[in-house]
Image (tube, rainbow over all chains, first blue to last red; front, top):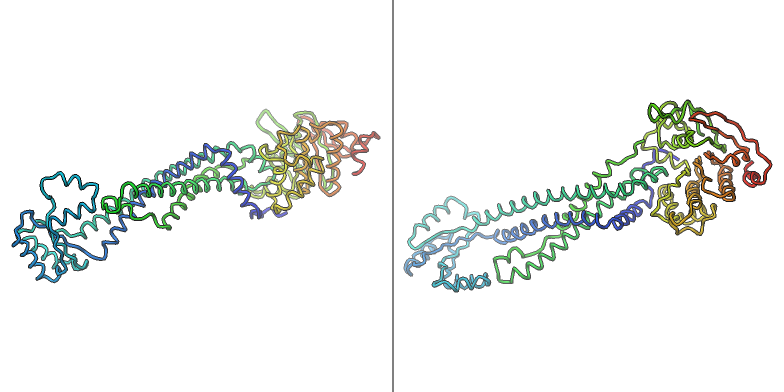
Length: 307
Length: 237
């Protein structure tokens, strides 16, 4: 029999899985702690990813066009409104325009923010200004020539404010990066903590099975054969934790969409636009398995025969 | 097959288990190792399985110098040795079948072979009806025989047994020694550590006697014409 054959026997993998599952079942409580840690960590990462994903979708929808909103003074005279309209008509970049009256703005708010419409109803007068909404091409909108025209527009009597939506799109993009970063930082830290929890759980399991491990060594089991079930146990704990996190996240998403985002509400609607794409769900599962593997690897690498 | 060259094993300055031990066991031999408790028998067996390393000297088993052996080679070396431990070393949470099957998994035998082999090994120790029992449900003697079945399951080159008949009644002792004798006939080299003076004296085999870590006697026992001896060693000669 060669002494250098390090390959694993054919039926080893099924042995690893059987043993890993049996040991997890035998130490249900400690395994539960490890699984819960992974689930909590990945739920938090997933929640950040979900918010960022939906913000990203909102940005993508706005990405094709740029809009300029020209808000008028609340006491703007009809002649002043007509003057603004004439100025816009004379400038090709603003040619595609739509007038939104104070009443139309209020009606739109009531439609989109149904749950806040009561607050507006308590006010003595309509707080929304009339405005012109102009579609402009995004490239042109950010040019120096266009900035000059916008400054001219601001100087027209009756114009309160000229607002460009690419400004909030830019802000939103920064927010998405921040959310992603915060999610990765918080989730990363928790995942490291989860990996250490798994490491301790595996270490505990190895202590419980110390005598058995010694017997395995004496009858000729390789270190791979001995460590394999523990590594699989860590990976399984990570996988179960990640699957639990995805399931909880989906349940939270459905509940949020049901209770917080009625169809016409913009306030929450954009946050519950859609769930995570399958690539990110797979990444969460892979992340859980990786954390589990690293945790168990940290434990098993310390074990070994002293002789 | 088993060669000790001036082997000394010291645990600390005041505790020396073996002093300058030299002996040779050739391939196919059946040898008894005897001596009082604390004589160094178990330490000697542990050195053969490389559970520990000698402080001085060399141990060579099946042509391999154990001191020079890499750790990664150790499991493959141990698969060549069928070891029967004094405390059985059965895995308590596994059934008798699983205890035997595990060895076959380690050796890479397909799962369909396991039941056949395990059954045959258990039949040899008359415990084939205990396939699904757990070690703690068995008597000491039965556990001993399971440990023997495990050691023999892959027809090892060397069989090393530490007091394998210690928990057995005289009838079972005969049966078990006969199993070792049969394995010896099939080509395994056998080394048995035992206190059983009667068994040794009746065997007609070579006996190495240890006393306080030193070999004090090495001779071939002269078989007595007693019924017990004939029934054990009649087959092996």
